[in-house]
Image 1 (cartoon, helix red, strand yellow):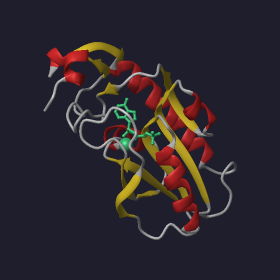
Image 2 (cartoon, rainbow, N blue to C red):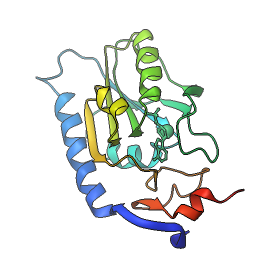
Image 3 (spheres, protein in one colour):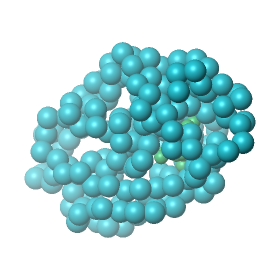
Length: 187
Ligand code: IMP
Ligand code: MG
């Protein structure tokens, strides 16, 4: 696995520092007086990619919260570009009247958030905010309005810290690029 890495784009220490800052921003936005009323928070990682990021993030947000789950697939198998997003599983308790924060690993084409934001709004959430660790530098993702962004990265295929290629490499602690021959190898 280590031998497949081309270069480290964002090392683990830098990720941890940024996750800490993002958690502080989310906490501030969901604490009175900024957040009025008694509505509670539901954090929704978009699986599978946001699993690692969200696990770190929520442990730095010291407010009452529930967790919901949405599994969206857009890069099936060995794809390295979006094949159109679809919800393939959901475990969302009633989010009516709750402040929802959707958490994703990376904003690329924007198809995932364009699919899930209206879905959660239509369920009657009091508010829906979006949080992504990475945003790829491409026109489609710059057009999307996102509330919390960790890092802007070049338009390259990355893995690690939850992000996969063919469902591998999610357990790498850093965000890295893969060698060209790994991406091009036939199964
Ligand atoms: P979007 O729907 O095109 O914005 O892409 C969002 C989803 O595509 C992410 O949640 C990832 O699962 C996947 N994705 C996009 N870019 C990459 C990448 O560079 N590496 C791994 N997965 C990616
Ligand atoms: Mg994903």
